Length: 221
Image (cartoon, rainbow, N blue to C red; front, side):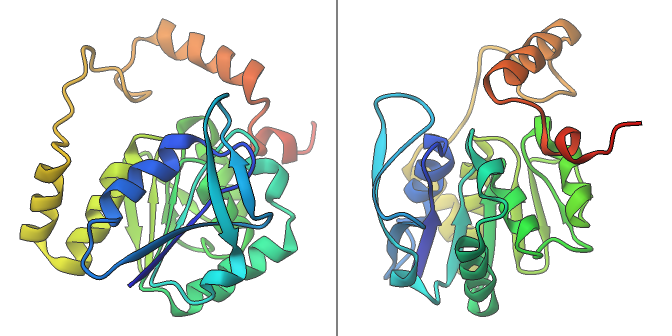
């Protein structure tokens, strides 16, 4: 089984490495990081990079994972990358995304008429690609599975393992990585975090990430 994890300059590390850690435990699997510009691919936080192979090195992956990042918006018009996504989806068993990676699926035309999720900051942007935004951690619609922000990629990958190998195998993988989150605060979603924390993080996102795609593409009134 071939798994292609799409990365690019400015991807978020856990978006790629979380699913890698889970999916690399599938039987007889080959997991490869791929990029439109192959080679050393830096993440959006300093000090971390991955070595990525060319897109064409995995033309017909069984599972596609599209990582999100701080630079995703810049790739929404990348014809070569979007063409690869469409072609890979034609034969994939699962086409998936983490965080803002779903914007790339949308730009490739793969979310039209589907339910999908992404990082809460970009959730409304999915409407611009004909999708129905859903504020859930993992959303499955047909052969497409989208995950919310960053850490939810682990959950998504476990869902994929469950679909491919069954509940017992997925549970074994979960136990193997001892995935049993117990954070100090129940503030991991907009619906749970205090209002002042949501406001603070929204301001941080605006400064570090910029306006959402929905804001950038909505005509001024």
